[in-house]
Image 1 (spheres, rainbow, N blue to C red):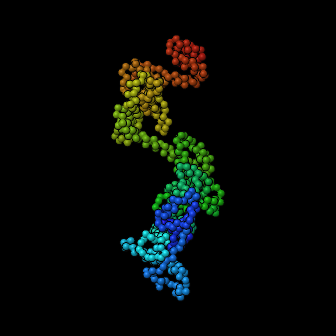
Image 2: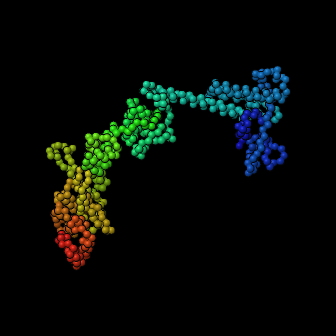
Image 3: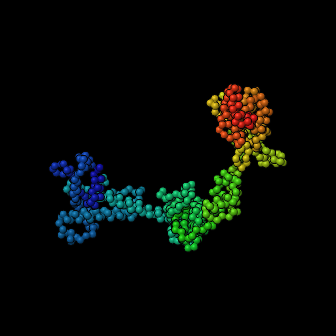
Length: 560
């Protein structure tokens, strides 16, 4: 702490008290007070303060004598009354008038302004010098009263500059509004004031989250929306959920307003575009509805229905139109025509199938990416030529089948797995159908090891022959007698194995056998005996379990 800071504390506590001499005394000190004349005295005072943090500070007013620089003739007071006063009273009045004259000089500087390029003129300052005062030009001894005057002067400058900037900003924004909005477009004074608002986006304003708040939109004044479409979608969803006849007023570009046309209902909501932003903010909102529910909703269009029920239609593309119509009426409680429901389902199916078409169109990119990352991979893409032949152009060709065997998987199987391959196929559930053919091996941990897979148009002898020929080439099957294949009893697969690998061992999957016979031979007993026979490691144990199984059902043994 310095002596100037101590002066400022005294001025803050007691106001302008003139030029003073400062003394202090601690509670535990005896004798006279100690005078504070420099910063070192202040530091000594602070170091002597005990744990009670209490110190007594005394300020004594210093009377200043008139010097040659001081001109009392310039001051406005009654000289006759001044001559009749005592010397002490005369000196006190002269000091107050001197301070008032200094304050007027500061006010004059405020009105004229200060040129930063000019050298500032240092006014003579009054300081305490023993019992008598004198004037000199040492600016380091400026009194705390002068500091207050300087601070007030800077504050007034900042207020004037801020007022000027705010006025320029309001004029600029007002000019923009006049160019595209007329006064006749406003229906209320609140909307007029909201449109001319220059408030920036505040952190305290609630932001509408389209992913979470769109399920049940709630509005409030000041709510922010990312775009005009987001605001419109929220209001339309609100109208459908609450079954209200909400309509949009004329669109003025930067302002959007919805009102309720049900009777004398005063409900309305108004949002406008914020300045220098794409964000829309709710300016006025009357949330009370006085109208009855409306069961006809203009916003429940076929496009809106298709967007909201796309996932359900994707899971059930053959959904009957009548059941779909009843589902919509039951969910929303609104009247929807059967034609609108039909158009909605057709649009949803177009979106679903359109995604599949785009994915099939990216197959060549997939082949190129795999070949670039794993050059030793095998990928065969077969296209179906159009009826007119190649002259119809490449755009007329359609996908037929694809075979994929990744290089790392092939190397891993041939170097570390047993020569056992399982073959199977399954249906693809999609708008275009098809069959997925797979070949898996058995690793050292008795786990499944993927080798190759293919997507074909159907599961028959032709597709299995094509798949097995490519597979035999990739895994290097030269002597087929050393290999074993496991599959179900699909006729096309059995014929293909006989053609491609005639000397290989062919065994049937027990789980497939049991599932094929489950409808006619149900029960725990037959299933247990079947698995005991399958895991038998000797011919004697196999014949034993088969004879026991024959006692349960003869037909099952004949099939085996």
